Image (cartoon, rainbow, N blue to C red; front, side, top):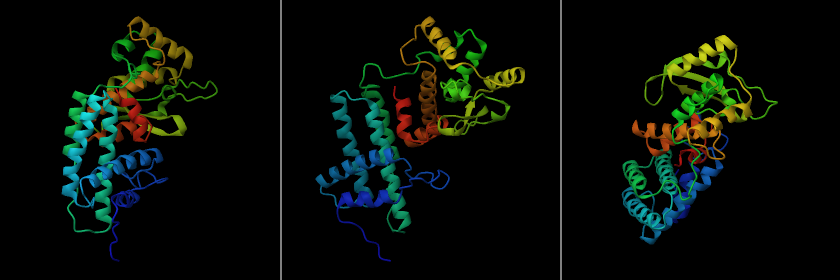
Length: 321
């Protein structure tokens, strides 16, 4: 069948994004498709904004990959200068870079599906360059305080006197679990202890390749996720469960212990609580993924999986600094 290509750049954007729409599909069926409606709206908005920029430059097709690459470089340069002048957060720029990465994937997926004799678009190096520049020029956040992560989580955990609470905090910080994932659900009617069944042994970290302890937990929405913690903490957890049967505690008592340690170490801020440790994990894990060669989108996706979110937009709230 003859390939029909829309004349309007905005219609072209709709055509390529249709090829990666994966609502209600499992990740195993379509690993890179868009399954979140929120991400779908955000990414398409940025793609259409870029299309409008290309139209202003007299371009007629987003399948002209050389022009797309050159226009994207100019587009990102203008956005970066504008955001620097307006003192916008780098989180905004990172969202745009992530959206344009998905735009690239959509174009290449469209070319593949229709077997078009067209070179693939490759803007990863360009986007990573702007990501690095944005971290130097743009402030972490457009707000005075919008970071629930603790400045020194290791010192915080060391200041927790109760052994059970300290172990739970260590697992949250190292593995990205929620409080309910370490046996301290906020809902008192809910029981979700960590047991031997959730201990999956020693394996290799999927990012670094280093040996880690693997813990499986059921958290929000009943999602079961594997989390990676240090082998030392894993052995502590194993020993604790062998002695006590389970790892669990009262949520309010656990959070109070964290708050007391935060006050003792000068890190207390209302709203941080145990969830601040999850923010610490996400920010550090994201940067670790970047340092091991992952792209911005790949790092967000990996961090999403390990924080039991599975949607990039949700993870952005954790990785912002």
